[in-house]
Image (cartoon, rainbow, N blue to C red; front, side):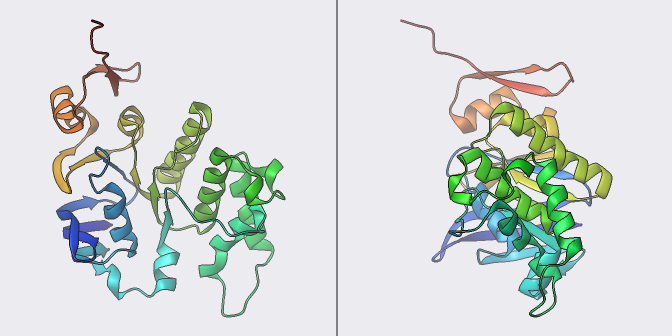
Length: 258
């Protein structure tokens, strides 16, 4: 159980998000949406303990601040939107970094750790790139490698900042389907930021719409992906229609040609 109570976070004393409260039950998926600059990434970083915050971030009622960095890495996996990738590492070596929280002091990875990474790379269609250096990958391939490291941690909570950035539609769907299977089969709790509102509506149980750092809408996709609400906060012309699976599809509307 992940719970935020009155979370305010920012940088150098300037709040970027203010008084955010939301409960994320075990095995559910919360998608944080909102226009550029709304504070989505800052909120995710505050959950991960990477940005100072006031209010409370609770894991099963225990404040995250009470967890050591090692304990936090054992229960929460965080994937940034623009990661800094170390030079000279292969995809496999990078993914193995995700096993570090589970190793003893000065311990090295064993057969089980390698098996976990091999399985993760296969799930992310990265097996053929296992020995390639990170710097040789395309943007979308690097994004999948970053997710591989996070999944190798085998945590109960996944915090993913724009996980589909740089991915084509096929790999984006495959990635989100994998995350959804982890949620439904293993009880993994998922919190993502997503720009693609249609994908957010298809996969998340609950959406949290931020604008200028404040929660302006929260609930299921049908209630949050409302054309008038989205038009107001995104300053966009759009309509919302029902997709084949019943989930909302957000369709941009072009201004009539002059």
